[in-house]
Length: 569
Image (cartoon, rainbow, N blue to C red; front, side):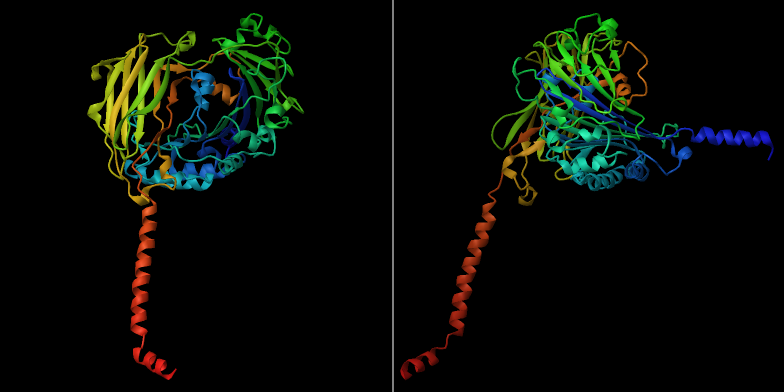
């Protein structure tokens, strides 16, 4: 082998293996207008393409890699949520709110690179694997009555399922933490105190997998793990009103942050000040580094940030590097009462059930325009238009029989022609015990519209006695409706292009359509008298005992012996 060829071969090997695994951990804290504190943990693990890197890993969890390879997962998102995200108080029109807000219970979306005939069977096997991995009842999503193929996804290999009744507890968090290189022994995960997390007002943990190995696009596999907690405001202190209270990391989580995970290339803590809060600070926001964040007329911080990033919308992001502090106990002390409002988006959405009785009713989805400047959901760089597009996805269980011809749309309290507002629609009726009903509608309304109402009527079905859950009298949960505003792009642009290798900042800057979830509706069905089987069994056993007791007594009694015994005495 000649020397030039050998050198070229060595350089080729070096270039192939120069890309290594990467792991980052980040925490974003945000004071909320109602006095609570939002904590968003973001962990990201990146694996180079298998063709170049091989199957032996140093940081990437083996269990996730095996799932990706066995079930050929291109994209997957799994969430466990306890509580409901308050869109009016905590916001919807910003990237962090889009990451944090998920429906109650378990939600699973997966895009698989398998033949179309094998998608459903692969989906079922995937749910069983995830159920064992996270100690949850995800395997119930194997049933065809709990998942569907979203039409708007434009992919026949995508499946969506939800379990609104699934309870979330520490048994789901422990295996989630085991996927991290440092688990909960070092770095930001040491702040995850179980009682603190599960006593909060809202808690949501997510697992996002993106793999490019099957497309040969040399992107590798990325695993993102996020944990969002809305912590209750601390106890009332003297001085200010009870709305805003001083807080520190040790006060919120019970401990200080002592260093970073040794295996993490990035370990940062961010304090975000929303646009309406940042406006109260003295100084020119275009020259954000001149603002005294440690001590100003609105609040004071326990330590100065290492860097400040300002977005074009006016919000501020204060960065603290965990690796440069032996102990970081970031805290905020309020000096004056301040009122601000989050970015709410164009419409406030709610879903409720109308009607009475156990026979029939209607499902109503209502959109009401938000007042004030926060009602504009269009971000910088997106041209304003004269209409708003709304896409609705509803998955309804089979025992709720929808009638497609009863669909009605009203604008500002007036009924309008259905197809004058609806651009696209797919209505899939349910099959008893085989498939759920699916309603996917694309609406287009004027930007000046103040209220939109969508109504559909239904009849309630009957379940067998063995199909009822143990707490049947509580009712049945209808999964949340997924509502998307495709022309309303949610992202942030920073004045400085140097954002480093931060995964959370990359997610914040990426454009995505605004998506919200409706409430989980509780429906009452006709419930049988579960005591009747017990009463029937008791009565039957009593009758049989009396009958057979009398029969045996008559058969075994000997009259002659009784007479002789009586004469002998």
